[in-house]
Structure formats: C-alpha cells, structure tokens
Amino acid sequence: MPYEMIAILMFSSMMLMLLTGQRVFGAIGFVAVVAALLLWGDRGGFDLGFSAAMKLMKWYPLLTLPMFIFMGYVLSESKIADDLYRMFHVWMGGLHGGLAIGTIGLMVLISAMNGLSVAGMAIGATIALPELLKRGYDKRMVTGVIQAGSSLGILVPPSVVLVLYAMIARQPVGQLWLAGVVPGLMMAAMFVVYIAVRCKLQPELGPVLSPEERNVSRAEKRRLLGAGLLPLFIFATMMIPFVNGWTSLVESSAIGAMAAFLAAVVKGRMTREVFENSVRNTLGISCMFMWIILAALAFGAVFDGLGAVKAIENLFTEQLGLGPWGILILMQLSFILMGTFLDDTAMLVIVAPLYVPLVQALGFDLIWYGILYTITTQIAYMTPPFGYNLFLMRAMAPPEISLRDIYASITPFVLVMVAALVIVMLVPEIALWLPGLVYGD
Image 1: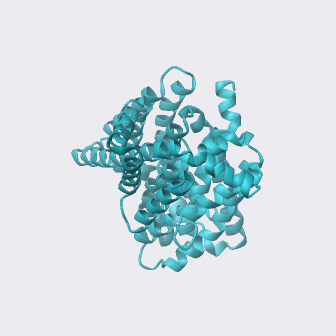
Image 2: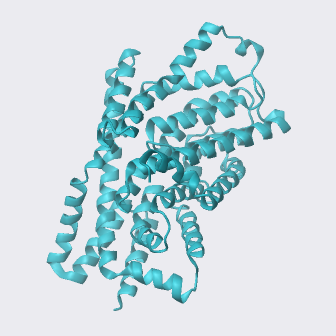
C-alpha cells in the first residue's frame, strides 16, 4: 500500500474514533501505536511510545503548565476575580454598555491570570452573566460578550495552548507569548468599540446603572481599584523578570504561582477547600495536557516516517497548483471545520505535525503562524452549528437563554474576530513587532 494511502487511512481512522466520542489522547495514541506496530513490527511500535514519553519528560518548559494552571485556579477559587468584576461594575456602570465593556476587561485580566479560554467562560458565566441580566442588558448581547471575551484566553499570555504549540513547532515560548500580546489587546479593543457603538445606537441593549448603584464613595472606588489591580501586579511580578532575562520561563511561572498563593493568603482567602480544589483541578488539567502531548508526539513520529508532510505539500503545490497564500487560507478553513467538533488542543496535536513543516517550507514565520492558529481556532469555537464554546455557554447559561439566542449572539463577534484575523494576516508586524523589540530579532 502506498504511504500516502496509509497516512489517509490513519487520519480517517483517528477522526472516526473522535466522532464516536473517544478520548482525544486515546484516539490519537491508539492509531499511532497500531500503525507503528503494523508498519515496523513489535520493536518499532513499542519503541515509538517509549521514545515519545522520554521526549515529553525531558522537555523542561513543560513544567510551566501546572504552574500557570495552579495560578489561575487559586485566583479563581479565592474569588479574587469577583473583586475584578466589582471594580468594573463601579467604574464603568455609568456608560451605555459599560458593564459589557467591563466584562471584556475582566476577560483580558482573567486571560492573564489563567491562559485557558474555558476558565474565562466559567468565570464570565457565573459572575458577569447574572449581574448583566439583572440590570436589563439584552440577553443576546451579554452571551456574545462572554463568549467573545473568553476567546482571549489562549492568545493573551500566559497562554497554555501557545506553550503546547511551542513544543510541537519547536519555537521559543517567550516569543510566542509576546507575539500574542498586541493581537490579543487589538481584538479586545475591537470588541469594546463594537459594544460601545452598538449600545450608543441601541441604548436598550446596555442600559446605564441606576444613580443609587453608581453613588459609591471615592474611598470605596480606590479600594476596589486596588483590589482589581492585584492580578495585574501578580502578572507583572511574573513577566517583568522573564522579559528582562533575569529568570527563565519555568522560574517565572513558579513566581507567578507563588505570588497568586501569597495574595490569597494575605487577603485571608486561602482556605483548605480553596487549596484542595486548586490542586485537584491543576492535577487533572495538567495530566490531560500531558497525555494529549504524548499521543501527539507518537502520531507525529509515524507521519514523519511515512513522509506524509511531503505528500501533502506535493498535493497542494503541484496537483492543486495553489500558491503559498492559497495554501495558508485553506489551512485556516480546515481549522474552522475541525473546530465544529474538536477543541483547540485536539486540533493542534492532530494537524500541527502536518501543517508546521509545510508552513516553514512555504517561507512563513512560525511565530506569526502560531498567532494565526490561535485566532482561527477561537473563531471555530464560536461558529455554528457545532462550535465548542456554544455548547459550553448553553451548559452554563440560565434557562431563559436558549441555544438559538446563543447562536444569534455570537455572529457579530465572529465577524469582528475574522476582521482581526485578516488584519494580522496582512500585517504580520502586529504579531512580530514585540518579540523583535524584546529579543532583537
């Protein structure tokens, strides 16, 4: 059987297993090991899994994952995120759509605390959504705001997904994080502009707070401002030493985790329950990522051995006659299609072994492509009919918000994200300027 047919059979088998509801790491790893056993016998098949495990255990930057995840869960479980929303509530409530704009600000800071989009979705749905609905905000507007804001979680550093991309693409994590800063803030600003303009034209979508709620003393405003800026201080204590070269990536992640823990202790919120929940959730998420990476390494090794990357490059360039930009756009469309039934991590580990070498062969920058990947997968998350975030939102939303409302709410925000993606594609310096400035590339 030709190697191209073996590669297609592997890929289709894996997709079939995923569609039947199998665990992502189980489906990918099973197909990889079975293919290796059939191709290279017992020795090759068993060595493949062992080699992937050893490669994973030797990858020192992987230690950052549990540190950042622990930091995010400590800040979430200790209710420091509640202080953030209270700050935005008081400071932004006098504007039409002010609380929705404040929710976007909350999501940016949650992203800087956790690095996972699911965490932003959970916090936004439990803290912001009830408050916005209680104050007369349009239900379609607020569900769209929370979903769009949560999309910043894998773009704004410390993004966990960009750490995984760095490992698979063999790119510096620090440069990828810095590359995500300007596009992430640009996208947040575009969300804010859309909300402000829409609520200015249709004030009933985002009414201002009542005078009673806005009349808060200056001392209370300053106290809330200090409480809300605490996560920014934690983020600064972690990132400034790293950017200046005083600490390594792993050391900075440990500083961030320790700073979050001490902040919860100082505020008197580090209870036994908070600590146990944070550790348990950190362990669960970290193990999930490690299993997925392990399976992805094994799957990628088989694909490399089959020469599947060369076959796909030949298909695109010679048989289909596509140019570099045509191939790149086709890749992004494939992410949107897969995002209807896979999460961002699964998409990354499935296609990265194919796409990353191809992107490099086409002459594109892999740091820039990592940012395109993160934006595109978040668009896929929110694209009907089967977007991953749509069903997460439905699970967390109150009964009065239907799935139809959720579908309708996300359309304008998806269009904003598509515009942001096009801008970053046309102007790569938006992503590459800050890494070049810091690292002198």
